[in-house]
Length: 224
Image (cartoon, rainbow, N blue to C red; front, side, top):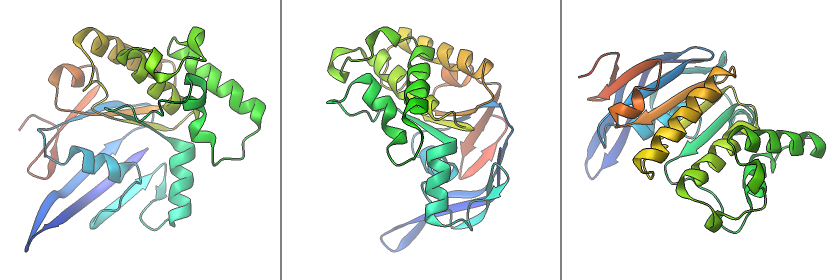
């Protein structure tokens, strides 16, 4: 599903180049549940943005679902994001004024899918996260744990090949954290979707099948 080799990324800070990623190698198989751990500032979110085709590395190669994403056009990359990659973020990234149904429908805004099909996929995803009885609720009418369930439903609705979750429990209490991670594990077990969670929390990472550690710009398969 994912093959990244010798990925490098640097940023300019004044007169210096800061190497955030330096020779990162990663393979994620179809239907794999993996976690990437690292301290704050280690480059976890930068790596997620590169894997999600939201940004380009300065060096290396990246294949997603068998396709070279670094030679793909911006339109081709946007199509991959809209059809094959679901995103879940710490801050939920939901629109407060919209209902649950409307928020989960957002990924289909720029797609030409049949409306009947979209309605089915949206309601199916909402049902999968246990919110089928609250379709018309707005974001200020539901709890933090339910907000993240809406965000997960939005990612699920497009039936992605990969879900990328960036600190998905960072704004949740312990009980809701456990509930969301259990939901991720359950959804992963019944789908063919690969799941990659970015986290600094060892208890969160422990839910994954494979854990990688990002330190000093490199990815390791053991704690550094």
